[in-house]
Length: 113
Length: 115
Image (cartoon, rainbow over all chains, first blue to last red; front, top):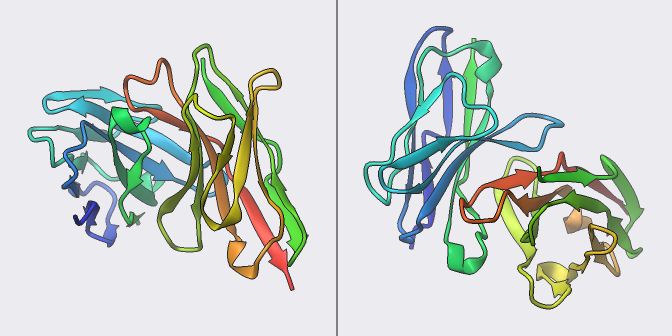
């Protein structure tokens, strides 16, 4: 199993540009989440999904959209990038029967200038 | 509402001495609790988890944590620190009833290990 994969690893955007961060998992996990990590703030939940076709907002959803058309994929879209979205983004997946132990991707480091 | 407080933002120990990273939580449910570690410029790795079985949980690399419901604590310990333990550590609790897969992270504790 590849686990949770994320692309790209690094990205630089200009203010106002849009882009999609890709996330895929091959463990047939029901639950997937997107977090952002900023210094001194731990990880904060952006959006999450409890299954294909079902998504909901987390703690910091503004400026981001998600969709979950398949169990495997959970892309995160930045609609109009802002410098405040400069961060490291992690995708994670989990399975309820394992107590929601989350498996994390390697992260995407995004810089918005 | 659930919350997690890591009581120290930075802990410094000497190699070979014990490690104690403190975590208190608040939850209206019976939570699952986790400790994750993040080495510099790396992703997150699960150290250990508590999911309502034994209250003393053993993890990887010699770490363990004890779930104390009366004190709402889940402190992480290790008898003897290694240089390779230097990293950021996160205490994490499941949000709500645990059915959504949502997690709440503490703000992290940076562990420094001095030679």
